[in-house]
Image (tube, rainbow, N blue to C red):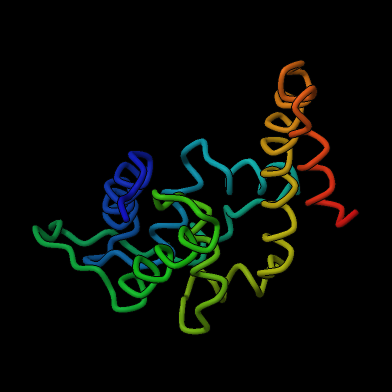
Length: 169
């Protein structure tokens, strides 16, 4: 399983967030703050629900150290989130790990600091999952519409077969 290019950028931006916050490590909340700075599915969901996570910046802001650390390390909970995100990509039958898989991982992991903060502020696993499913369904509808508009597929009965399979008729 591989990471989407956006995830590599978000991980890189997580380091910048850690520097801005005066930390020498990258945790799930650094990742979450970096994720919110890019255009992706979770960012879209958060905007639609009008969830503002600027409180995270204020919550974690520290005084910047006099010198910046040269080496940054991933916390154990961030390493867990990386591993669990692969599981969520697999569940959704996707070959690449996306930003939404990390949100699922953070919300599912009781030891994730970012997940705990999200839950405390009203974003539950099921709420995020519902919004994610709403965003995914239009893709399925487009696929079904394309099949339904193809005269050949209609004539050979594929559309009827798909409909019967879905609706159990």
